[in-house]
Amino acid sequence: MPANLPNPADRPNLLGLTPPELAEALDGHFQARGQPRYRGGQVREWLSAGDARGFGEMTNLPLRERDALGERFRLEEPGVDTVSESADGTVKHLWALRGGEVVESVLIPAGDRLTLCISSQAGCALRCRFCATGWSGFGRQLSTAEIVGQYRASARWAREHGRGRVTNVVFMGMGEPLANRKAVFPALAILNAGYGLGARRITVSTVGVIPGIEALARRPEQFRLALSLHAPVSELRAELIPLEKRYPLEQLMAALEAFNRKGGRRITFEYTMIRGVNDDLQLLPRLAELAVRVQAFVNLIPFNPIPYVAWKPSLAGRLRAFRDGLERAGVPAAVREPRGRDIDAACGQLRASRRPDLTRRPVINEPGRRFGSIESP
Ligand code: SF4
Image: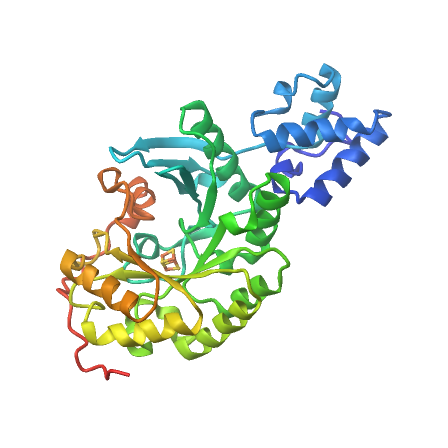
């Protein structure tokens, strides 16, 4: 390797550059090599079309220019560790990252939509009680290139396997995206402006990182926000989501109201229903009140059992009662079945199964308890 070339690991990964950064890097590179300006556009097209796995496949560039790109930059996606296909059409990829970490992404077909759920962290530090990723602990932050790489590789897999085009992206995989804003925000810009995915087709899901919600509200693009609410009162929420103690529900609602005032950015509440834990009908009026305040759509999701707690999903009748009660209060709501149960699809479970050191936590034999003492609003 010539002395003036960067080590392979130090070469910038083009997948992690925002459109202006990419244009600057490529224009500078080709200009220094005496190449015409359109060369940068050719590379950008190969990147956004998503077909090229490496510079060698950019066949409309002269061979020596493909070699030169490889000496200056990287074009590196996460490697495939495992692909699992569910009977319901859900497809889960487990991606192998540099340094031995693994993360998941999931393709979820529904009607004419194909939603990709991607990860923003390897593991998660926030330790929500109902979440396999939380139980598996925090590994590290993902880079922008690793986030965009999941999209690019998953979208290509979908095209090559007759599943069509990815229409929506949700940051609901492993990790709390607003706790990795340094990598996630550029990734949002790249997916939107670089890969042409409309901002309203990209949803950032959070358990309530208020500074992150405020930062997202300041962005000009109308990305959507999903709040993992899971309980409409602070005391109960803190039992499920430790972050509630740092960012309590009332402050969180104020941040959501400010987000909502920006207009054009729909908020969704995610409410995982756990039998005997957060499905008491007394909670319903309070849930409806919160949703009305920020015009939220409520997704009611039966708890997907994980190995670490003995909780069970709410019964179907209770899920329907919540949905009907919300609709009577003027709140749009839907019951969502968890997808891909037969492929162990609860977020974080594949990582835990791949890392035996993460699976030795004791099962908490907690059959659930009623929160009947919580006052009705
Ligand atoms: S629900 Fe989200 S924030 Fe909570 S532990 Fe799981 S990945 Fe982390």
